[in-house]
Image (cartoon, rainbow, N blue to C red):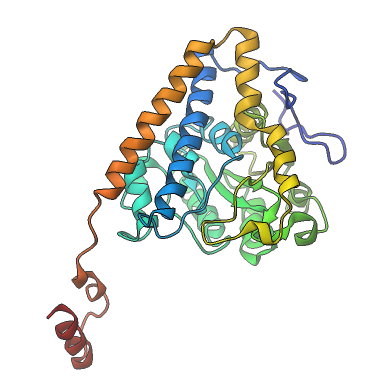
Length: 353
């Protein structure tokens, strides 16, 4: 196994499976047939839930929701490579990674329902940090956490997810600089989905994101983010490198955001429908499913079982979300002041009757 992650020549990302599912690289990434089938199961489950969440928002059950359709391979492939003690620092779009890490989806979605801030799941138990809405602010936190892991004497690694737009924020550069100088056990995982809200990547950055790692003294790799095997292998190599004490790795996973930035966004105002339809040709689920079927690792019955399980699961999550009660009104006033002023107490009395 190479000490430094491989990267494609020029701008070409590392790829194992072509868009039609045919192998173009070594497909042996060290996973058993059962684990390979699990990758497909997680991707199918995540996509079905993602679509259900969008429906829930349209029906008024969620306040706002950021879809991730098209990014299933990037999230599942990377999260599946993590060890039990590794810690995830997410943005607001990593529901698929959260599922792989064992986060309860109903609890996760309480943030988007507005009944709890950041999700009521225990980050220490799930090794999955709170949802982060501000762009890139979780990255310095992740660097600090990675330093803490090293000081604790563990071999755990921190992985921080972020989008291409985050790389224009100072927080990204500060975190990358700290990670490089301190050789932190950290993986910086960029999901380059083509758009920083309404700004295309070509107008958001002049260079290639993965190449920025060199300036901070550690390797970068650009992978096909719609190829779950390539993502898994790149992440596993980065994790192994960090565990050896060789420092961080920047992974740029080239993918595409099929839907809008969020349910509060109208992507048709800045993006051509033909572009979206073209992107569907590289669909990560179809690509991996085709390969599994062609190799005999999975059959049609397994594919159907995945779809059926995903349907049942999505409806169970729907029921759980709808059953989540509104928070007590007095929460607006709790934890605000240690010694509340009289004006604040009057407001509390008026609001709560």
